[in-house]
Length: 409
Image (spheres, rainbow, N blue to C red):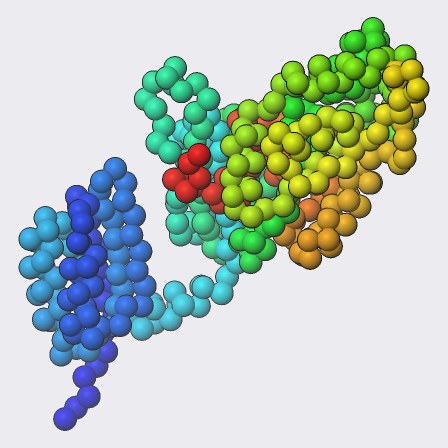
């Protein structure tokens, strides 16, 4: 008897979603000993879109298609059949070796204009969009009901980028023009196994610079702020600026630190971010050019694992001396601490994340596997790998691939 020829058949199913559709369709294939080569399914507002590519022999294919037509009619869904040639299938298999990238769009709202513009850049670079996933919950129709709502969608794309530097530049320009954030990451094993995340504190975890708060109490607020802003823009050396600012705090009673700590303006999303990171097994650290007193306050409140910051010297009279104790935690030290913590936790540096806003954060942002500039100064945003400027710091979770449906508090 002549051996039956194999056939590759792609079925596409669409229609109202309901329980039992997948079981019914795959049950037919199982009874005929068909091999499933690929399968995918999506549900958009209770409307099913599903594809199954299977291999069977030519003697069974007619009976399979007949049974599929019968059951899809009963289930009130539409089915379409396409025969796939071996050449087409082998070409598809060959594409699996190409690079995969994850492109994440993030903002208070995601618009058709934003998606269309991003998709055009993806096409220009010779990439193919394979999967689009919504990571956030559904947006409210009335934005006044939920003013801090956020939207995020993720593109999984495959191919070889023609010019990555230009693609990154085009994305950043587009994000600035259309008011959203965008992330481009290579989809490697390290992206899926991040384990350590290090944060700057001032203007990152809190919406202020603590040294400015102390300066206000000491009556030198304007002078200190001018130095702080210049340092954050990278115009003067951090060590020099830090020494000058701390000197201006001489004579301030140490008791004011408790009052400042208890009234720190916490950045939007910190509580949610820390709850999810701790529940997911991440190690977290504060690496700050600010002060240990306030870092330890946040550690106790939110459960950070490590705090490294600067120690103010206190005199016997309970007042600040205008000096500090030990080495300054500047940009270079932050980078060193990031590497040290990775070693302590026995993880690859590619599994680390750093989040900060100032010029002194750039060394650790560039060293980390994923560096994120958060509501950062223009120079920092221009040099960082990724940035978030439109929503709270819990937006970091979406760059890590978390979905709202998995991380509800």
